[in-house]
Image 1 (cartoon, rainbow, N blue to C red):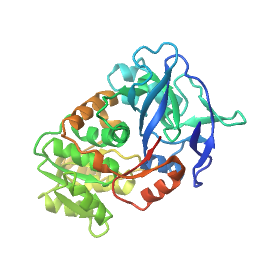
Image 2 (image 1 turned 90 degrees about the vertical axis):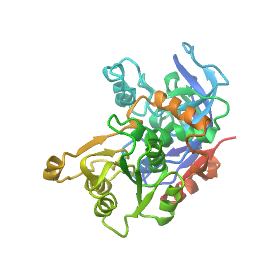
Image 3 (image 1 turned 90 degrees about the horizontal axis):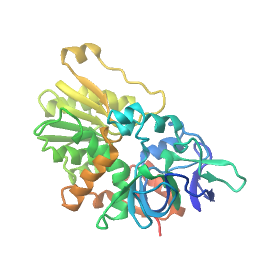
Length: 364
């Protein structure tokens, strides 16, 4: 099968013909339908995130079950599915505590499948890894059955792909916060794919103010289409001061959907008394934040992390599917660009330029 392979950081993705093994026990082969172009993939490409190489990148995708291995009982050929970039084992202590998005075995095995092996090889027999145990920048994916969530026919593949990462990560980070309430003030720093969906999550909770922050004016205007009530251009002002002025002291919740020490500090500075900062975007490896600890105590601020929507991805998938089918969430218009697999480097160039919305690889 054909796939986009990253051989080394800071080099273009290469379209290669790879050898794919048959699904093993509990595994399925998925024919890809659509794959989103996400900044997390770009972090691997530019070397700011450490992943084993060579690797088929791509972790935001959806497709159709083509074949199943032995022991698969919940899925069948023809099922249309969202793919989860976390494959929960269901048996580790973290899964049993109800946090499958933090599965111990998934993290321990990294870019290999849960049994520690790989299903892709190049023509010389060398191993090729799959990002998130998926690698959706390939025409087919072999992965564990628990990575697949069936979807109804009325959910388009492009929409399902985005639910696989940016929608679940953004909306989930907001609606799954245990102390979030209707009427709160919220700020979202970063108006990319995840940020737009965090804004939609804030809108779902009837936040009284939803402040979008970015360095591109056109992205801030785009964010208003998804529920932002106010915007702050981080190129022009001190973000924390601007948000505190807009909200008479600071917001109840602020979300860093970009991922850096700068944006994390902006989140902290944006909070009012008793406010909660949520770090959603993955910062470069070894990045650290530095907060005013006295301010944290005296204003009783809280800083938390949110991975993959802060809850079981499959549970959040179902909520989002229901919201999409009933017209309560906008996903179609987040997709602004469509590419064939051969143009994947052009797709990432658009991401680097900071263009609005999401680009998507569309398969035949």
